Amino acid sequence: MRIRRLGGWAALCALAGSLWLPATPAAQAAPAEARHPMPAADGGAMLWPTRTAVTGPSGQQLVRYGFVDTSGRRVAPPRYHRYTYCLDDAGRPARVVAGRGTGADVLDLSGTVVATLPGVAVSCLGTSYAIVVPSDRSTAAVVDLTSGAILLPSATGRGIAAVDAATVNVSEAGGEYFLDLASGRRTPHPGRVTQARLQAGVPGVPAVVPAAAGGAARFGYLGRDGRWLAAPTFDRATAFTQGHAVVTTAGVSTFLDAGLRPVGGSWDRVEPVAAGNGRIAGYQVESDGRVGLLDADLYPVVQPGAGVIVCPAAAGGACSVGAADGSASLVVLPGGGIAPLPSGLTLPVGPSLVVDGGTATRVQSLVTGRMVGLPAQTTCRGAGDAFAACRTRSGQPDVVIGADGERTPFEEVRAVPDPDPAVARVSYYWVQAGRYQGFIDARGAWLYRERRPTTLAE
Image 1 (cartoon, rainbow, N blue to C red):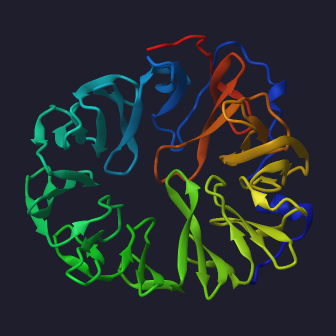
Image 2 (image 1 turned 135 degrees about the horizontal axis):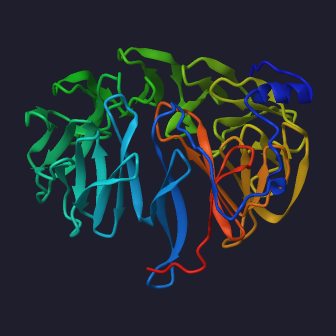
């Protein structure tokens, strides 16, 4: 494989470009309660989810969610079992549907409850409608979020899936159709939709025609007018994500652009590389046993060649590119450069930290060069760009390492992405430390801090 190399620690720091030298969290004193601004990426209103452990009726540990606003003020207590953001016409979060038990509250971004809906599961369709699963867990219904009116009742054998903010795909015994919720218009179509959600700017959704006797199922793409945009000729077809879909025919995969044109070459294997927040950082590709990397725009970052490429799921687009001589380089998708990794440390857990294997004994900062020894049988996962969480045994606190290679006082860390799908970065981190829990920034400074409850049963 052909890669462009940068040399030395300076190169690693240049590669990290976006990396920093975080202040040591242990040195930062904070009061029992801390409250600081927590702006969204665009400066608008937002609700950030808190996490609190509770003890269930059978003694099991459960998680309950509350919310903090952009001023760092808690506006909803930790009483919700689940939550989802409702996106407006521009794709920005505008409301939150937070469920508990057999009901769900609809919150505006100040934390005010503007509606309450029955159901054990509720998902948004924009800001006007929702798909609701009733308490008997029968098939779903569609309701108006403002009035609570049922627009499409549940029915035996009926399936409902979101297409966009005002359209659902309805499957019934006699076939499927798109339903426009504003007009009530039904548009029958000839396929069975496999992934209904339609991202803005893409032409259609993948659908399959079931196999005839002795034949194979075939995939194509349907437009909202119910017609085939791409005839069902593929063996496999994915939904469009960030402007591209992957299709496979006779074992050969390629990409389609928004004009349904083949782009990006032909490959024996195509695997997306996750960037976090539901976005794709790029793709790992393989042809004739030679592996390479493409960025999200399908530009070849690592030309296919002999070797091994590993892109851990929680590493935020960081990949290890191994050579035949045992050396390895770090590639950070989508736009990062390429630089050599330290000898023996070939597995990235993020853009700034690497370990010596799936069961790690050492973790090293690519920013400072500092190395931390770990107990035996430790596994590490990345948490955004700034931290690694390493666990020795199930049920034990994590060892949390900062991007500077220093061990932090935190016992747990979770990245909290900006919920706007257009924002491809982590905004804050939810942590636990002794008697406290709350949000920190990438440098480890407390932004919101509260006491962890000693008992909280339900």
